Image (tube, rainbow, N blue to C red; front, side):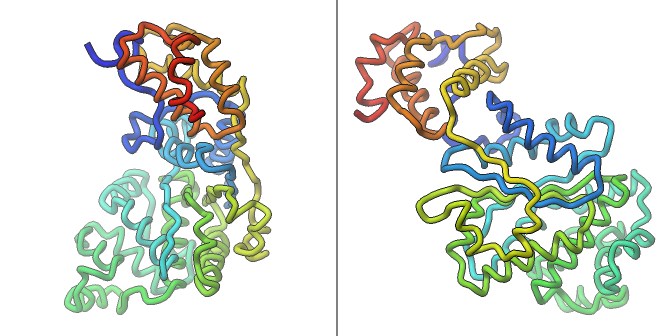
Length: 367
């Protein structure tokens, strides 16, 4: 018998951090936010334009969870319906001396060159022909053609993109194909990514769009003015050079150090003007939390047979806990419910009522 069997639960459903394993990522409650994010993704899947979206809310409001949930292949397939799915990835906003290089590296880390080659080949995308229509940069055309040349070793080519394991001897071989140098500037990185994104989403054949989720965007406030300018140039350029089929989400955590109103200090007007929508992840209200709890506790990943209620929590306990915590983030509620559930399991309780809650209330809400 597992710890939570008496509660008809496979495990503790109250995660304090988003799951890494995509199979464990679910969405519970908060249908309005989910619908807004879904509609933005569906629009990018169907319409050939590029957009910049700002997601904002306090710490623990679910922005990172949203980024990971909407990167699930099964979720993207459902949103795409009969159309090609997006290529989606989440990026941790870098706090470094080379932010554009770090963003580029994270993207390259997530690219499976062999799979990309197979997908474009299966969809009959003629890379040498299409690449000429998505960039007029001859050097980048040649780099892209090498990337999708099945006679070129994919591992060696990744070394070229990283500029690490790539040797002068390798470069001499590439020079025959018009690639005489490696990338040396932020502009090179942006030009390459823009050409690649435009190629793989050309006429939405292989991929309907590319989606990049930039998490912890508030870290831009820790950069110096030169790097803030570099990030702004990258965001503006990647959208302008990928005019179709690119969707960028910026996840911003509000804090004493950063507020939505402070963005003007870190985002240039040219970038701010490209923000198409601001989606707020608000502090949860009582009805939001109750819907969230019911859907979470009865999700098949945690419970085989739905009870269609809050079991093992008595609804009166939920009311007491919500009242006691007040206006706090979803993460804080998860912490409290997790601790209450674990304590009840340890104390061999069959359900959780107000009497038990009052016994350990100080431990749960810190009073």
